[in-house]
Length: 114
Image (cartoon, rainbow, N blue to C red):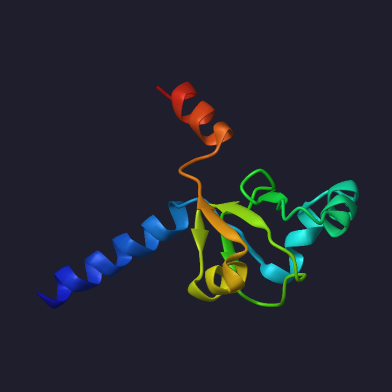
């Protein structure tokens, strides 16, 4: 049984190396993914409309909770959110986290491999 367990660990390590990299971004870097014009418009906006930050389009998959966001509502689209990031985005019921199933480029590459 010990040999079987060791073999399973080796297979798991091989599988881990074969998986594609899934980069993450912290909350304090979210605004760098938004154009300067969008940032200015969001700061001036008094209607409560929130800018949308799509981290998947910027090749990120997960949003982590390090740092702070400006005191304005924001809608963040990502494949994964850490618990802390989700709490900080939704603080005061103003922001929203939107889970994205997959990006267009991933679907295209999957269809090309068939």
